Image 1 (tube, rainbow, N blue to C red):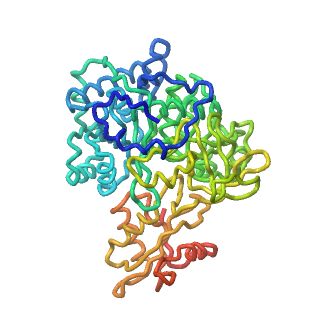
Image 2: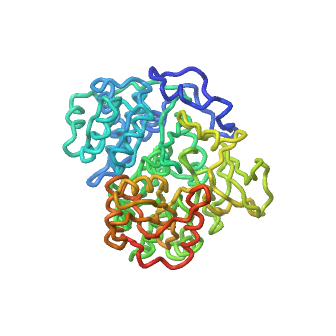
Image 3: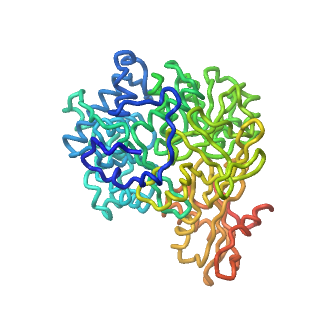
Length: 548
């Protein structure tokens, strides 16, 4: 709910919130979830404890470290550039486009301090995908890594609402502007229920959904999941692989360490080798990554010698019990599995290390409640499979999207996951209830990949499904009906893969391609994807491509 009072001059996002009756019934009954009426999450996380934390390590660089005071001063200067040079008004949406770097973190804080709304995007997104985000959120300003300007400028050409773009990093303009800016800045006194960020998730149609979160929501995920499950201290050092555009990464690499006076190590090009190097050199204590990465790390030498690591978090895809047990055997650390969503901002079901059941997602995080429901929203008994329903201090508020009615029913958030709960109250994932493919922790919309494939002249029809994969959990597989003059074989499969990589974000490309004469359909012409999924029970066909 909102109070009707706002510090935003630009109320675009607030004006497009769902009607109160369409929003979840929020819960704030857990101790520590009462926030002041005026709240700026940027200053609450960074500036309010400077007298105590000012000189403590905050963000580790390749060749040094920023203290809390250093990050505060740099974010203040960037905020001045946003306001004084770029004309940012409170409530304007600011697109962020970069890999995980210290400068990206400074920009994130600067936007909130200046009263802007953060719209962080994956660095791999192409112009067409960026264009959708800009249009839906009416993004007027952007801060981008100088190495990633080309696709953004192409999108900007088709969306003139994006008026102000400034680059940072090597060769960027921002650094030149910062030299003349004072290190102090009076942050905008936003309300606790002013919009702080819009996080986009693709959804099964490929049309992005903007998930709106308030300043108080940012602190709430820190004061529920982080405080009660992770229990971090100021001596902890966080790192991980998820981009900050994923709220899983934002929480694990920025929000949680800053809330508890800890430090973070952003990794621009994450890999198993980079993770191991960071853990060993920086003394990492807390790791956030997908189950896929844990499986990859298990193959790396020297894993047992990592003495500082104490907390490992997994989300984004199901954590198999075998991976959980293998990691425990090699490291002595229980991976904390969890389920979260962009709509809920972060993890709402998990378990502390002493309560982990390998293979189970866990228990509702303190501050949240969850249940498994049937079609009429009735609570099912233990052992019955149904829809996962959850509510707490955060929840789904789509930006002017009719799909709000699908996600929120009777005040509960329906995540689109099928679950069962056991006699002990633990939740066990069964399947996704939609066509989203989760591969290596990335959510990939099958219809979006199909749309990209259909722009190739050799493709007459296609259908995309998830294919089980021992390393990635699942991979994208495309079933393709080729044109009469095309040669359906490995060469064409590779050409189609390259085409998809060039059309949408490369991680969405089909790692397997199988050519069929026809696609199975109903009498009304609808493709029967369930029959294609059934084909995945057997060995991969000879025409499948599985590129690295």
